[in-house]
Length: 188
Image 1 (cartoon, rainbow, N blue to C red):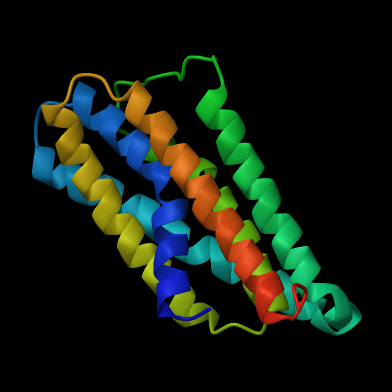
Image 2: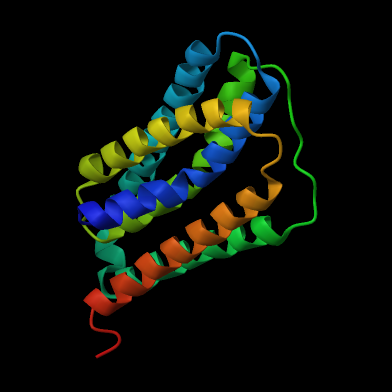
């Protein structure tokens, strides 16, 4: 992945973390900068680590599926996109917790970074520079999550924006999947 693809992937992957950060920002009133840093660091770290784990898995099976790697990468990104679209149109109300403790942070960090695991697997299949990509994903997620926390303290209701962000993220990831197919000559 080049810088632009990595950056757009990072923004797309950060939307779940952003939504959680905004919710916590809305319900947490004290030590706002410390908590913004903590939540940003936690989400950013998980978003950095998960693609590396996925990359390791993708690299280990690369020789077995080299001929079909671009299709597998596209399918994984398409599945993540479909999940994000499903989340955007789901009628289910998202649960809100009021405590920002380590167990909650780690749980949310894992839950919001599972999509990054699939992206890392795709990157492993495509021989990408994972440290570069994961670094961009981690830094962008940190900034977006910390900002989301601070924004959440200022805004009352973001349910509609949450859906828009999920739709945007899904379209970006699907577009990256199509770009991978294009780079491998599928549309020629």
